[in-house]
Amino acid sequence: MNVYPLDLGATEAQQVTLATLPTLPAVLKIFFGFLSDNVPLYGYRRKCYMAIGWFASTLSMVALMLSSDLTMERTVAKVPGGTTRVDLVPPEDAPSVSLLGLCFLLFGTGLWFADVIGDSIVVR
Image 1 (spheres, rainbow, N blue to C red):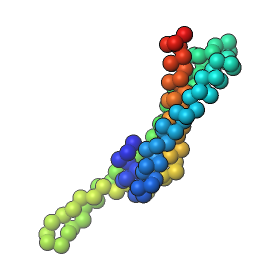
Image 2 (tube, helix red, strand yellow; image 1 turned 60 degrees about the vertical axis):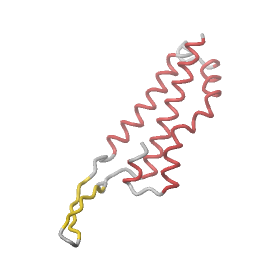
Image 3 (cartoon, rainbow, N blue to C red; image 1 turned 90 degrees about the vertical axis):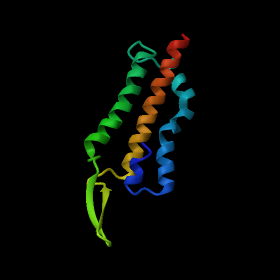
Image 4 (tube, rainbow, N blue to C red; image 1 turned 120 degrees about the horizontal axis):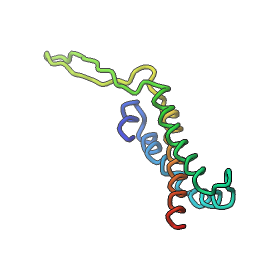
């Protein structure tokens, strides 16, 4: 998660933001717990919420995988002096930094949501 934004040409500030986004929803853990305790879905207080959290995390990564080409293209350039240099360049349809950030945020939200529900099942 930390290397690919560098290949996309993200600035240092964008790289730090992208690394922080998955952990940002951790501050909402208390609200996730209150929600699951007080608003049961289909008669269940935990299982549906855990499924929603894992579904959101999975959906974000599948959307990232299907919406863009995540491979790197190899280019060979000749450098003066007779040597060659191999560069890895992202393809034209590589994800934007903002799409990457949105997917990371959704992934983190689902992950922390499922984590809170798993913790509550253990405590119960």
